[in-house]
Length: 333
Ligand code: OKP
Ligand code: ZN
Image (tube, rainbow, N blue to C red; front, side, top):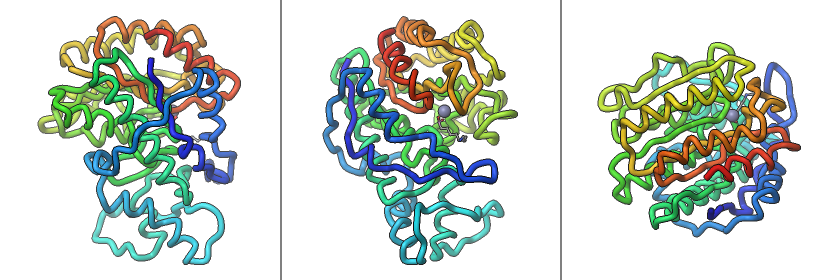
């Protein structure tokens, strides 16, 4: 299977995340990508397809803010990474000249700093996803994009959950633009892929199914509940399957089978898998109990339907097991 990664993705290295009222170590380290690369035997550098495919799922003002904020932060006299502290939940007209106003307008949490390299690293990750999509459009059965930083929490005009650019959404939209009539996204990261869900919420041509930790207890809290089904043309094209802490292979596999059945009825021409290895039993920020061999089982269940498949990396934070878990998953294809 072809694998894609750009070394520019390593440069984004936030100093810390502001979480539970304190500074804690940033979970999405550049080392995560190095570990995965070593385990899968390296990757090709993707071609640069420009910003146009990113603008198909993100607002220009948002991508512009990602690029300008680090400079505005310095100009405001600040050291360290740009982190928002005020959020426009009132949704009234906004004046976004102050860097803090601009930051808060385009973010939903405080764990996603906009470092000077956030844009270029996430842009490169999206290029990896586009390269994997192209490989599959050209006839490969599956391809892997090592998208670190992850992307599935980023919406059309906001960042969050370590994500700035939604690589899975970029890849899905690129497949649509290349002529694939219906594209499905299966998100099996531990956390709900709120950004992906939001981007395709009103659309019937991209099906979004997610198996994840119950947002009643877990981040991102405000999305991923069972009733969320999409709106307008998108009604019925979103499927959420939350699971409790302690979930093991059998229950996860049953939920994934429900998602795969729904995707089968949708009959996509291409599948994008948002794959997170943070469902592993020892993950430091998560609470499921999958084992390393379980990932090959889940992948084989996905592969059985034979949809051309673009696999996009999302989370997974247990450094010692991450490489093995990703290799196990890819082996299932
Ligand atoms: C990103 B992805 C723990 C903070 C937890 C943020 C979770 C983001 C997960 N230090 N909140 O979906 O793996
Ligand atoms: Zn996650």
